[in-house]
Image (cartoon, rainbow, N blue to C red):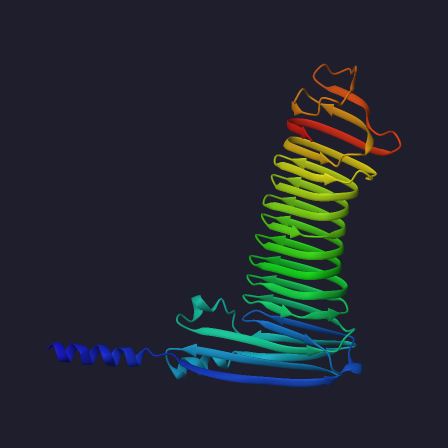
Length: 343
């Protein structure tokens, strides 16, 4: 009886072994035929390399299921479409059925992976869902959207627009980046001009000439910036080494600014219900105008500020010059609720 039971179990195991079929796609086009390549994929990864004198598109459609009949059934709904519209080459994964496939075909696995080579200087647009986009160095304009996947690139020379949700974004060096991120982890090592929007995301920019950020929830780190503009709500924000100017509007979170250069031109902070901490390098000088509603403050004892009368008895304005008068820095603080710490 025991042997019969084991034999039945063995047959069952053999019966549920996954079957697989792979379908390959390959096309190439001369570089002078198109100015832009557009890729749309929803079911796998996209790997992109740059160079050569041709657009080279290769794709692999892989379907796994319990039976070969089911594999063939699903495979017939999938294909790679290529269309030419003026100077744009459009490549897309097409499914004749809506492949929220876990609901339609239980036990079926689909992967559509692209390997693409694009000549330098051509524009690239990539939209990918349920998969990652991986790139090396890229010269030209780049537009990327990734949902439920990661994006990694080494260097981008050109206009770079990115959207990413539910994944990890990493760029080593960019010239001009406009990014929108939701529930994402973002790391940019170096950028000239970065403009970022984040919702519930962790964003790190290690070095930038100009940084503009609008964040809601999550955390933001800016390091080594010349100029920075920040709008934050319910976020933990940290800025390191401001050399020229900072403009910040923070609500219901925290803002820490370390090591403001003694040669800075302007620091302008408006906040409500936020812990604000500012650290100025020694040796500089600036005019300070501080407006607050009797908040808790920790400021150096040598800050001799004159209190000015206001029509609102709950609001206080204090002003004065701090440090060496040969410097022309301007500090404007409007702090309503929360806490202010100056070092």
